[in-house]
Amino acid sequence: MKFFSEEIYLNYASTSFPKSKIALKSFYKSISNPPEGSRQNKSNSIINNLRKRVASILKVQDEHVFFTHSATIGLNQVIKGFVKKKNLIFIDNRSHNALIRPWRVLAEHCECNIGSIYNEEDQLIESKLKDITLLSPQLLCLTHVSNVNGSIYPLEKIIDLVKSLSPSTSILVDASQSAGALDLSILNKADFIVFPSHKHLHSLPGAAILITKKKLKPLIDGGTGENSFAEESLSSHELFAEVGTMNFPAIQAMVDSLEYATLKMETHRKLEKNLVDQFLDGVSQIEGLELIGKRSSEGRVAIVALKPLFGSSELHWAPFLQSQKIIIRGGVHCSPLHHQQLGLSRQGTLRFSFGWNTTSEQIEKAIQALKEFSRVGRMIFK
Amino acid sequence: MIDLTMIKTCADYSDSIQAEGFINLEMVPFLGMENLLKSLQFSVFFLGEPQILIGRRPDCSIILHQTGLVSLSEVCSEEKLSSIIQEIELHAKKSVCTSI
Image (cartoon, rainbow over the protein chains, first blue to last red):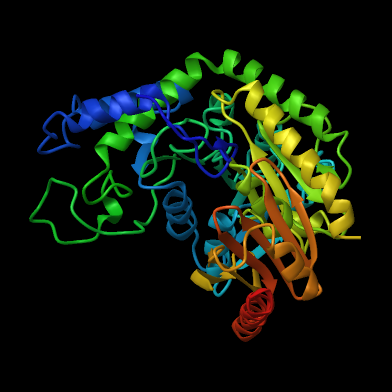
């Protein structure tokens, strides 16, 4: 399939475009075949085979793998299904609103804390992490990769530290910006991992993966395609997180994409690092923009945030880029707390995010467009 | 002269309105908008390829495309937006009458 879009799409951290051939082929194959009648109770059903494939890639047990409709639903499932009254929950300030908002809801009957365990350069402050473990929270929610500036946080080390200092603390990892870009099997000591299909896996919306080592109170009750006479809640059911009709085509595409991304990870990482270095090199010479976060492609995925200067804001730069058919995201990216730490409580950032199919020519066009706006911006906002 | 197709609160700033629509460029051509907006105290710049016009003053930013597509942002309220549009339309009518 060919895409005829004239637009240069640099907004993969929101969602990928175009979707990969692997994902589309898998999707069409799935919708071209009749769906299975009773799905989950057969060990050799399509869905259970997909579950096994995910488990093998992430090095977790099959029965810990669940499919949900989105990462937001997966995160809500953990937060609302795991936390009990008067529990202590801690979330780091790199969190997306998909974590912050359900956490705020719980604040009515739980002790909810939020704070940073990283400095402004995104380095771990170990003493702060140790302070948190002293409180032995029931749940610690961590973000693997910043959706603002692409920084990779050292979660393997953090999970080990927390598990050794506070073994009773369960850890939830939001891997929304790392799935497809980084090896997630290093996170498998976490109790919960959630990630969607449609971002760096280059697959379709409508599917996500929830890894849970603990039984959760179901977020939604409904049919599972078996035990139809049982009317009680799914609390004790092994498929407590999978009810109703599942989005099989999107799940199939997601698992095939996860397998493909894992296979090609090293190649894709190199490609994306080159794109990031090219972009950083280009924007470093542009007046009116300040790079937020790491100075090179090391320790990050292909997401770059820029702070507009000259008294301008992302509300000026992003529409201009759009007029030049360059699609990026300007705003706070559902990460208000991270922006606050960066001193950007009343200003957002310009976020550029690339995929493995982004080209060097596209990056160059984006740099040229930024230069053009910078040239005039100095006069507009003087 | 200006048909707005969308008015909404700015995604991340609830105290700011943005709008999109079309300007009838038969009445005032694309390049003619420079003088019109300047007379309304906008700073006006042409840039980009495809070329666009950016107009800015403290209460409003405008981006105008050669196709007539226009977006207005940094406006504090819908009432203010209406008054800015009225201002532009009134001025456009005046300039057309003057040129006749």
